[in-house]
Length: 252
Length: 223
Image (cartoon, rainbow over the protein chains, first blue to last red):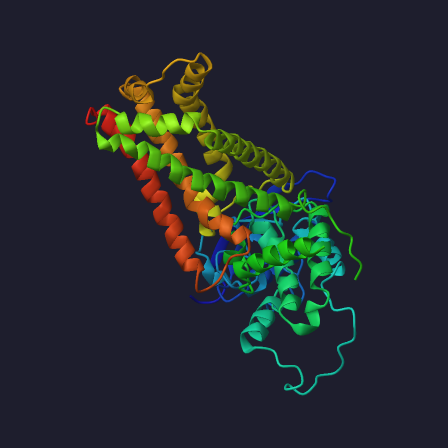
């Protein structure tokens, strides 16, 4: 397909603030290149809106290379769009067909109030993280690998959990708007390592308590989060957190 | 890191453990139930069946377990209601378009609906068999449980209700069985495929066995 020959109809959620009602607004866009990213298409649409003296569509984005976790769009009913294993910024227009109608909505959850249009407030994740998603002591500079032997499987599992970018696609996808996959990744990342084991009990209790306090739903094991997670965080992490929480509460 | 010590049982995870625990308890009960029912296949005019049913109705240990069973069902239902209400509140503004089928099975998302259908079936089921048995025991009468099956299962409408109830049970179990293990944190690359396969065959076989009973009675194969 050559450059700039896609014509699309976008239905985009417009909402002025968390307190006001929002609605889907239809925008036709023309001359879209299949090589553009989804966000670049939004840039073009916004330029057109600005030139017409209309308010541009607010959406979150930062690195645009799939690692920062800022972009957050539900595209045709799927978090980060129709492809798996990528964020919205890594989605390209070649994933759509000329003439398609694309519905774009923000992450929807009580704990993720809309700031404006497609941008949502994900500071609930920060508050959960602040309850224990860290190691309290300075673990020093990188030491000799043989000083602190860690089984390769544990190191790999911890690293895979640490790959969570906190984008919130798990919450957006879950029918219960549950944050279990996110919290489980943050708990697992430390629970698997000797440095993290010391505070493991308090960590899982406090992070789960904060998760409940923020108003996220609970997990019904549908597995949708795992499918839509751009970083491939698995349900094994949720099982690990369930185990950690049970053991933590049996201990004290 | 200070410990804020949240309430274990009322936490979202605590409620899930209780759902999983009561669910597994009910799964074990279904095995006992299907074994007792299978006594009709002795096809001896219900002699064996009535003997076992009589034991279940009069033995003190069974009576205590029966209280536990009702408690299990009530806990499962009440927790499910609380969790469903909380989960609905977690997303006040619904999506205009949601492609849920892309990431999960319909029955894993419909446990509340399937459970409600099961509960409705349970009311019919208890009214058909459990209540008449209790009335007989209360009045000190001899109750021929086997004979009481025949008029119920000769009714095609009731047969349909039972089969629909069993379809709900099938899908409820298909998700519930393996889900309970995940809730308890039992997810292991070596054992989880076995748990999932076991759960699948458990669900299919137990539902087929349960379905075979009213069907054979309806067809008059059990005398």
